[in-house]
Length: 83
Image 1 (cartoon, helix red, strand yellow):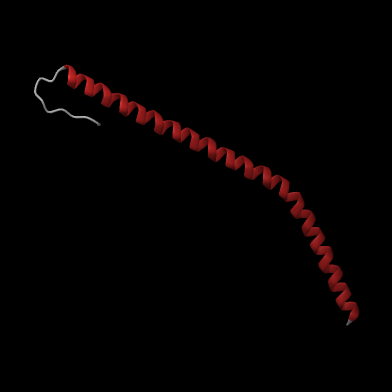
Image 2 (image 1 turned 30 degrees about the horizontal axis):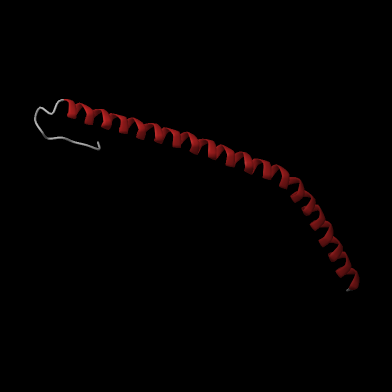
């Protein structure tokens, strides 16, 4: 409630104040609902982006793991041969 009136028999002024208060509450409610929807859309967009990045990174990670395994195996072999 934004406005209140304490004058007895205010009539049309009281009605106007009530209509403003009603409008304000409706706007507030619509804004909150809009923000909730946008928040859900934002979360979905973030999830999609993470999924895309994961999908792109996973093959690279696998390749790097294979490279790392071969690299360390070669190092180990070289180290063992030099002993």
